[in-house]
Image (tube, rainbow, N blue to C red):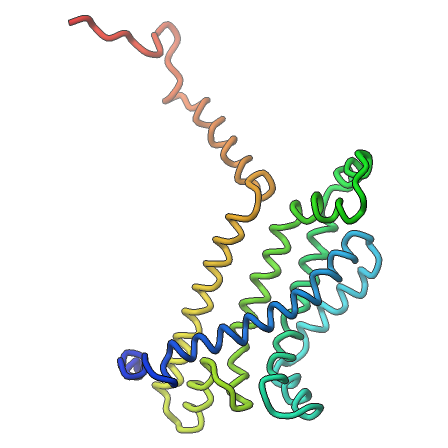
Length: 248
């Protein structure tokens, strides 16, 4: 693997350097994911809470995964014009299905007895969603966010196809110039960026989800119970658990 282009310090500065292309790439991805979240999460909450439109959510999820991103970009260009708009539209279409499906699945997985108890203490439907269902479903919802972000980050290279920036510039320009070290460098940086973004989202998920919801509290109690019953930590019969110190 030729890494000369990647290791060349000149390619890590300036308007065409890796830092600038990474920022552009993250910008396209962030805008697309935010728009998709604004569209998909409220719909997923409504469908998941009421149970109505489940077939629609599942069908949209399956259809969205089957759509070719490049085809969506070309269709958007044909309808509108060349620019960043078609790319954002394609990325939003790509991000909506996992967000919608995860939000719906997370709410439907909440124990109905918990929801009934919330109604029994007088909570309104909107309060049940915000205070009961969403906190319990948060691990699943955030899993959908992670999936959507990774798909968008890996597909945002399409921006270069319509003359925009991002890490796709190294791929498309490298193909046009038959500059394979440039292609390899773009692919490596894109892969590393996706891994870093996923690790950061995993950290956010760990910090925002309650330990009692994601099972951390139960696992900690289980480890404590095992330690308490471990023969190595339990004193033998007839022995003092903590012998007194011998007087000097």
